[in-house]
Picture 1 (spheres, rainbow, N blue to C red):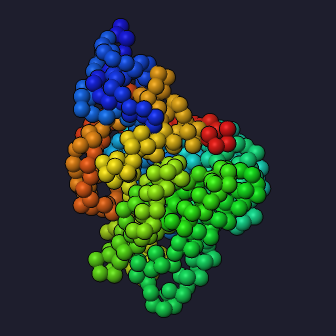
Picture 2 (picture 1 turned 135 degrees about the vertical axis):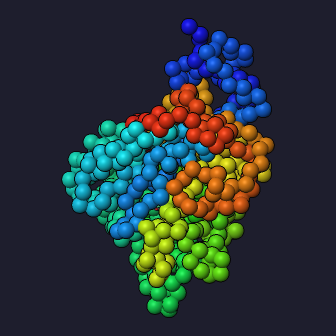
Picture 3 (picture 1 turned 90 degrees about the vertical axis):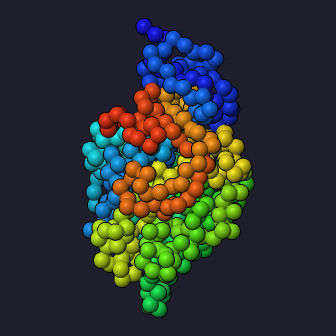
Amino acid sequence: MPTFDLVIKGGEVITASDRSHADVGIKDGVITALGADLNDAARTIDATGLWVMPGGIDSHVHIAQYSGEGIVMADDFESATAAAASGGNTLVMPFALQRRGTSLRQTVTDYHALATGNCHVDVSFHLIISDATPAILGQELPALVKDGYTSFKVFMTYDDLVLDDRSLLEVMAVAKREKALVMIHAEGYDNIRYLIDQHEGAGKTQPYYHATTRPDIVEREAVHRAISHAQLIGVPLMVVHVSSAAAMEQIEWAQQRGMKVLAETCPQYLTLTADDLKGLNMDITGAKYVCSPPPRTTTDQAAIWGGLERGVFTTFSSDHCPFRYESSEGKLNPKARTSFRWVPNGIPGIETRLPILFSEGVSKGRLTPQQFVALSSTNHAKTYGLYPKKGAIAPGADADLALWDPTRQETITQSKLHHGSDYTPWEGFDVTGWPVMTLVRGEVVANDGKIVGAKGHGSHIGRGAPQAVA
Ligand code: URP
Ligand code: ZN
Ligand code: ZN
């Protein structure tokens, strides 16, 4: 019996803290050795010239999620996780979204039914709480946290998801008691509704006005309010999809005062601007870029890069939320043609997150390779209670690996991607650095853009306490 099922030979191993040339020995899906000249293996993969990194963990994706009457998300679990695998990811964290009036436990059961047997990479669900009733907060939520669903997202906007301030405080109090992490969508509901009514009254209905009805003031105010609530309760907070310098300043302000405020940002806030929502000529094609918060300005992009470099941000996620463009169930649903208000919010990005961060960050010298690993994998595992089983290259960790060619040049284009959307917001975007092979628990799941093996290798992973609350 050989010592190893698989040895990855000759690569440069990059972790969140180190880089060194080493072979990686794998047995039963787990890393069992790191070192020179590991040889007694049933199989070897030659990684000469490649970087061997922990597989990407994308801790903010939406898959097969209910999105409103007549609106259908473009990905199911099979297509989303195939795209994730091809993009160098080994675990994604989608949301089990509770619809008002329904049980949270039943919601989780329903999402598992959609995912089970269909995934190419591992998944681990967060919860979305839209109905903060005493029964949900008193019984269902604590029981689900004990079962390993140790993070939940709450919203300060959207008609069918918004929680009022009292409910936000109640949710945070449960998180404190149960040792779970609250993720907050911070945009102010009433400010946005006021601005939408003003815009529509003035006939401003094109997709571009999605951006001007959600200005950075709206995000900044909500971030400050959410931080204040968390401070009052005495609980850590994760502010997701931070888009603006103004919002980031609030987070840094809190961090400098010793508050446990974590932050996430996404590729759209480094590479797109509100002008992309103008489309080809202030037309409906701008709907392709409608997401919330909206992309902002190049000044905001520079500020967010600064935040990534000096550690304001813990995680870099995609906020993959895919809709088809040419579809009456997607961006071009009949009502969306009348106003930006009805364009489903969200853009696809599960497959392009890592190449964009690698290219714009590492290849352009803004981030070290180790920072890239931390922002794309290790910090996600630590933040959400998966570390060191996930997000690490060390004996005892799952053999979840991405092999990267750091010099390969590619142009992002829809025909190369595996997601269910019919477009990518990054069409024609040139990158340097590309994931050439992805392994989940020692099995190759993607090889040079091809999905290897049948769906179903990906499993649901329950979680322990997030690092910030442990
Ligand atoms: O526009 C976005 N981001 N859609 C996804 C839902 C969310 O708020 O993350
Ligand atoms: Zn959100
Ligand atoms: Zn999201």
